[in-house]
Image (cartoon, rainbow over all chains, first blue to last red; front, side):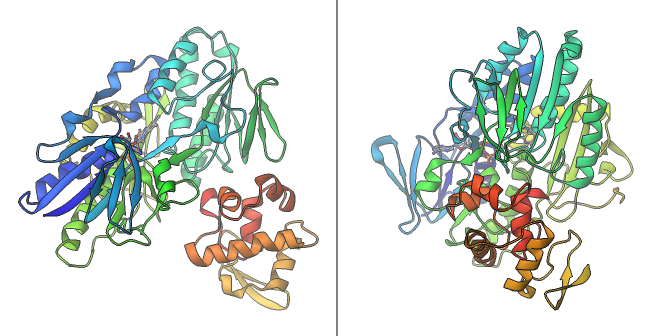
Length: 410
Length: 105
Ligand SMILES: Cc1cc2nc3c(=O)[nH]c(=O)nc-3n(C[C@H](O)[C@H](O)[C@H](O)COP(=O)(O)OP(=O)(O)OC[C@H]3O[C@@H](n4cnc5c(N)ncnc54)[C@H](O)[C@@H]3O)c2cc1C
């Protein structure tokens, strides 16, 4: 029996399990997946919780429901990978699992303790985050009773998952405070270490214009050193300060601690892999997929989906001793909620930045690229259904994994 | 692509204004590039950062981020801001003769 071991049953790991059960013969293969948490979170839904659009229960389902019969599911924290011995140690019963092929899909997570002064008495009161279920739920409660002041949204470090989420949060906050009749009492500031609103220049310019139209202040090139909770300021390494009454932060995002323990990661515990084939730089039977991988593209569910599609084709060749001929191009496709029932859609890859056009049918749509529309907002809301029913189950999506230039203009 | 005379050599720059070919770089070039971004004198501390950045680039194909310089080279971020004021990540890549860092694309 050959052993395929998948670490992490989040978006990427679950998709891999569903693809593999379809392709591999269980008389020859033993497929095992490990995760420490019984609950699968629909993380894109965390964005909507602070504003009461989704409730705490609208974004969770049991992981078990999504792991196909025939795949062994083990619930346990993973403690260490021993790549020289082709085995993984679990916390539960200090058990070892051996593998022939290993897929690391343990994602990335917010680590507030990386930033001095961020945790402490103000955490959960004047300082919040919405990248975890509990953080988003706490913020929802706090926002309901907030009577206004300086709201600061900041990004601590690059890269972080879903690079558009902080901007979407700001757009929704602008809309939500309008709805509450509070907008004139709230001063909103968006603080980023980047030189503009977004990593890619054209999308950055468009998003910057929208911020201006919504009367959101933009502070760029601000690399935060820490938070002074007594003075209520966010401080940068070059000694600039941004005062806040409420700080909503995107903490430093890091891969699982066990990646560092195993000596397999970079300085943020993300795993360096080949950007076209996902093979680990040092071990040719280890792959990293989804947010766990250190790749020069967005960390997003859509990217994980395209990555898993390409990886599947390659892996099936690889185990037959053939060359991996399918090249992942870094394709990302993100709906950006822009408030007041509208959204923007961006589609890009390693080499081509987001361009305007129609999607997915060239010239037809129904979605508009790099432009606000109501249809794009519905795309974003439909994504939850797609996620649970199509994406996770590894079914075909009406979008190719390689980016297409059809229907786009320069 | 443009080219300019730096330290007696004709050197090509990419569309972002960074050195197009890292192998065109030498210590005299670095000194002159440093002047252009407002650093008068490259000290031993500057060179430590530059040398780490160049060898890291050889290994990984990209200029290091500030966090990487902190974790892998052991240079505190505060010091990087003192050595290469205002935009350290960019200035380090520029003076080291490397392309624009990914973190700021
Ligand atoms: C607020 C927010 C909004 C987002 N919006 C969007 C969006 O609109 N569109 C989009 O495409 N993407 C969005 N994303 C990103 C998307 O959710 C992630 O990119 C995606 O879930 C990544 O999948 P993954 O499998 O790599 O990681 P995850 O889904 O995070 O899964 C990792 C799994 O590994 C497990 N794990 C980790 N360490 C261990 C360990 N040591 N032992 C055992 N188990 C472990 C975890 O329990 C988890 O189940 C958003 C994310 C957030 C936070």
